[in-house]
Amino acid sequence: MPIDESALINAAQSGDLAAFNQLVTSYQSQAYNVAYRLLSESDAAADAVQESFLKVYRRIDQYRGGSFRAWLLRIVTNTCYDSLRARKRHYVSPLDSDTLPADRDRRLTDLRSSPHDHAVRRELRSQITRAIAQLPPEQRAVLVMCDIEGFQYHEVAGTLGVSLGTVKSRLSRARAKVRISLTQKGFSPSVPSSTPSLGYPTIA
Image 1 (cartoon, rainbow, N blue to C red):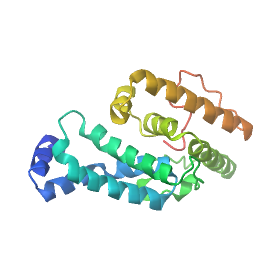
Image 2: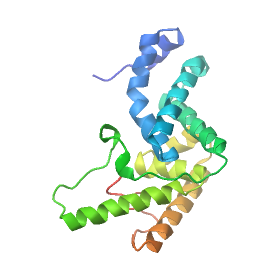
Image 3: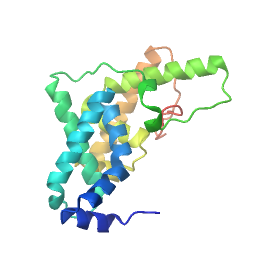
Image 4: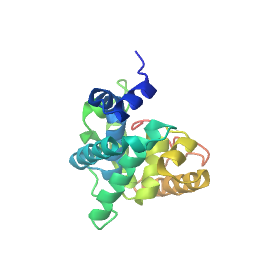
C-alpha cells in the first residue's frame, strides 16, 4: 500500500517518531545505494546514511515542500562529500561491485549467460566500479544518480542544488572518462554520446 508521504512528513515535523521511522524505511535502501556508489565502501556508506538520517531528523522542521526524496538525498550526498573531504583525497580504493550486499544490489543477472560471458561481464562490472570511483565526487554523484539510480536530470539538479546545465555537463564529462577508462582496459563500449545509460546492463 502506498504511503501518504505528506501526512508522514507533517507527523514527523510534529515529533512523531514512528512517522519519521516510516519515512526512513521508505528511502533507506536508495540512500544506501547512492552513498555506497559515492564512497565505494560498505561500512563508510552505512555510517554516512546513519549520519544523514540523524541530520534529517534534526532538520525536518526546515523542510518546506517539494520533493522530499531530493531533499533527503541532498543531505546524504553532502554527507558523503564531507566524508571524502575528510580523507584528504578524492580517490577512494574501490571494492569490487560484487561486495554490495545482495539485498541492496539492484543489478540484473542474466542466468542464461555462459561461464565465459559471466566472467567477462563480472570483469566489466569491476572495471566500471573502479572507473566511477576515480571520478571527481561531483561528477560521480551525477553519474550515479542518472545512470545507476535512474533519476531524471531535473531531479538530480534539485537534489544537488545545481543547474540543469551543470548536471548535463558533469554527466557528459563523467561518461567520457568512464568510456576512456574502459577502453584503456580493453573494453570498447561503442555507445553514442546521446545514449543515457552508457551501456550499464550489469550494474543498473
